[in-house]
Length: 235
Image (tube, rainbow, N blue to C red; front, top):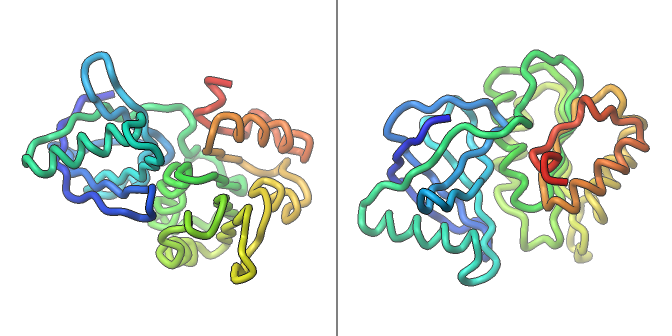
């Protein structure tokens, strides 16, 4: 792990509550798709965020959901906005995490995320696309409602470059206008896939969500040794 200073290239809104941040590190950083970084607020206050960009990217992308004023993530957004306005650097620690993409495996992949946990799996499928991977990849993204969706066309285009991949967004509380899958995202995956036994499975989302999914997926054939999530260290 290294401590790196970064310039804020941009901060934009993906939805009403989700921000896309692009950082330019002061030196080349090295990480594996699926790892995370700490955003350093102070020596005693370091806040983890998944890295949404591919390891090949010159910029570091974060997707930060900030739903409440003065919340843990909103304080980070305000620090980033202030740094951009003042043309000052921010500080990160990178890389962290043990739920990174296992590059030595050829097993089919199930990448599943809820909400802004999407950033965790985005780094993986983007990197696999750049590698020209021929692995079978199923990408599931669950959201509460359609207003939470973002960059659907961009995501579909990246995943379409993989010869054996599918992208399945799932909306829990869908309107009649929604044409895709509805309900709980992990249930949609269990409906689509007969058994998870052959898969490497990567999960991201709220801790309680990941904990519930782990139990359901094991009952559906998943092997614990082939399931990965940073949340597993805390639940």
